[in-house]
Image (cartoon, rainbow, N blue to C red; front, side):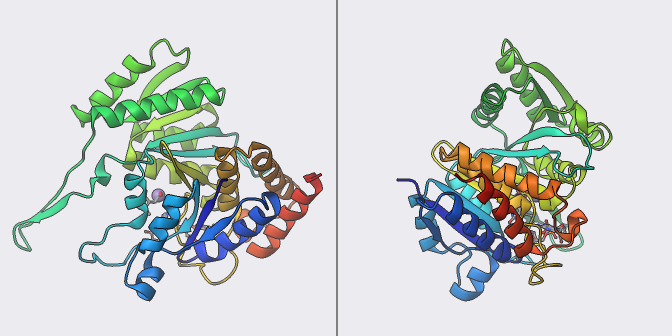
Length: 336
Ligand code: NAD
Ligand code: IPM
Ligand code: MN
């Protein structure tokens, strides 16, 4: 039997995950959802950013639904982001971030960013040399043959399964002449003969083109930090962070979360847009083999928006709860 672990986290994550859990209760009432905690609030309450019970809950689950966490404002001794820890610990090496047109007056876009999720500048290996005034800040940026190859193969497989036609590789091989150059070289070696249209761009130019010509993109394959930045850019093109879902996929387990963070500026007001979390929930349903229910949820979100419903960031007038209510009403119309 499948089980889901739901982690609200901090800030608007605490307002959004309960809405997603409400939706899950309606659309897949047979699937148990276990709730647990991590992040800054968990640290303040338990002394741990990632309590053992939460790690256990994740281990027991097939899929995790996560809201967002707030990073500690200052460097905290030995702090490691629980989210980055989970991505690495469970080898969730592929971060899938689709940006599809969802607002009726939004630009034409139907792209998906596939971001390498365990390597690069996110190595966590940093140190400081020298004394203040004369310091050198050193971060190790690590790519490996294994890491490069598996993300390229993932992207090829994703494109095939999802009937995508083109992959563009985003890199900076003009500066990183060993690591990113190897990424580019291996991309063409491995992807040759796949039947897909292959190309590559420098990541800065790619970010420009996403804003200027969003309609031209299909699958974008890129490295960890580039993917982080470019996915927020693409989310802006698609109508804002409140609309952008994501999946962190590993061999055995996956974690679904909005692209956005804990949004302290609007937290506690009940106005956060639940669309990104609900679309992430639809992706989760698809992943655990409940594609029909995932489609139903995505269609319900789209129908509610098409009928003029939405939160303030989308130009609408509803709050988090009211907009979720509209989505649930739409969904119930589609539940036999
Ligand atoms: P953010 O994504 O939290 O917010 C950026 C802007 O987008 C804010 O103005 C916010 O109000 C708006 N926004 C985000 N989500 C929204 C929603 N659902 N509805 C309406 N508006 C929304 O980024 P930030 O402000 O740079 O970071 C805040 C905190 O979140 C930081 O501590 C950061 O480290 C953390 N963060 C966490 C995650 C995560 O847990 N996955 C992701 C990104 C940032
Ligand atoms: C994201 C976030 C994370 C990242 C942070 C919170 C560690 O920005 O998922 O996009 O940088 O990957
Ligand atoms: Mn990010």
